[in-house]
Structure formats: structure tokens, C-alpha cells
Length: 297
Image (cartoon, rainbow, N blue to C red; front, side, top):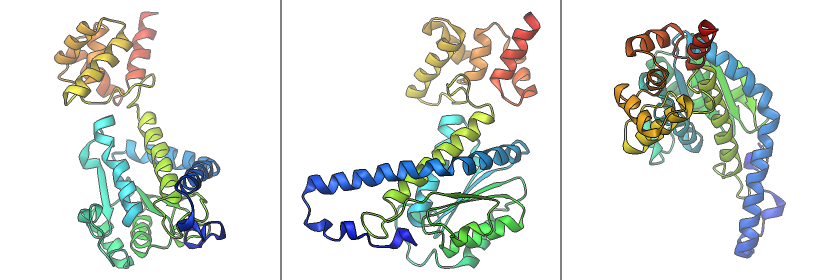
């Protein structure tokens, strides 16, 4: 496992100047970014498969332990504020439970059975998308969880940083990001962790776009639940509708903070019509607006 190997380049790291040390670590981050490029086809395939399952009502299930688990949870936790993705459609399967997010729980990752039990407890099924992340690809908890998910016919996705990792064996989609040796041997929160975060960013963002939760590069599924998001919602509505921000604010207020409904109100729809049209088109604002344009021609 290259992620665990000591690199001859860094054996005297602790004797280097601060500048040289920081430069070396920065170079490692660039390596992490570059490593993701080879994984793009695998990410593409995983996204398309995941979208089909989620359209059937499935959930996103993030699985991991230690650093990898924390990175996975960070990705999933951002889906509700950014895309208004329902909280009951995101599941976190973390070795040691969610308390392990803030405090390391030694030994929690050592049992495949515990991973499998956690997936069973979550009621994973064929409509769910299970994303298992492990830098080494050998973490027993994560492997056990993904094996159980595969047996339940879920869309099983493995993200690991070592070629031939056991985590890939039960996966339908294998996302390999070969980041190589770390500046600090085995410290996979460095290069490996950065690459994992990039992969998850790409995956979850692409999934949400394909599910119609983005329109013209704007977060139209965002729910304006605080002052900052309310201001953002007003700007989004103003940009799409082409109205003054004061008018956009009124549309957002009438829509109870729902950006898509506010946009349609700004385009002259009645609230009930807007709600019905979005329901008909599974919340896809582009499809609704395209149909309106077609009807007007």
C-alpha cells in the first residue's frame, strides 16, 4: 500500500526549513489533484447509475472510518443547505458512530461484521447509493459495509487510493485515486484525503445537477432559511427572472423561501400552478421553463 510507505524524499523532513517543508506539502496537494483525472470516467459512470437509483426514491449512504469517514460525512452534510436534499435521504455509516466524527474511537474500524450490521440497521436496499471511502482500501468496517450493501443490490461505490484494494472487490463502481506515498508516511488526511474530497465534490455536485437541483449554474433548490441564504435567494431570482432585487425579494417571500417557486412567480405564474408544474417535472426548473417557452411559440 503506497499510502503507508515511507518516501525516501522525506526522511529528513523534520530537519528542513519551514519554507521547504510547506513547499513539499503543497506539491503533494497538487499530486492529489492530478490523481483524480484518471478517475473521471469511473466517477461519470457512478454518477449516472446513482441518479437512476435516486430517481426511484433511494438514499445517499456515506460509509467510512477515521479521516475518510469524516470527509464523507462533510460531503453529505452539505447537501441539505446547498440543494435542499431531504435529510431523511442521507445516511451516515461511520465506524464508532457519529461521535467518532469529533473524537477518534480506536478499534471501531476493525470489524467487518460491525460494518455489515450498520448497513442492515440502516435498511439499505436496491434503490440506495452507498459510497464507501477508505484511503488504504483495507478498512474492515468499510469493506463489511460495502459487501452488505452489494448483497442488498444497492448501487455500491468504492473510493480508495491504492490499486488492488480489497474495498474494490464488492463494488459496482471502483474509483481509484492513486495519490502515492504521503509526505508523512500513512498520514492519509494529506494527499489521499484531498483527493477523496475532490472526488466526493465532483460526484455529489454532478448528481444534484442531474437531478435538476441546479439551473444555469445557480443553486435553485436552496431553501432560504437564514439571512445569508435569503439574500442569495433574492439574487438568484433576480438573475433568472431579470427583475429588480426588491421585486425578487417579494417573490421569495411569497414562495416561503422556495427559490424555484419564486422564479415561476416572477415569470407570471400563480403559486398553485408553479407547485403543480414542478411536481409534474420532478422539480426540474429547466424542464418547466422550457415547456413554457414551447407553449408560447
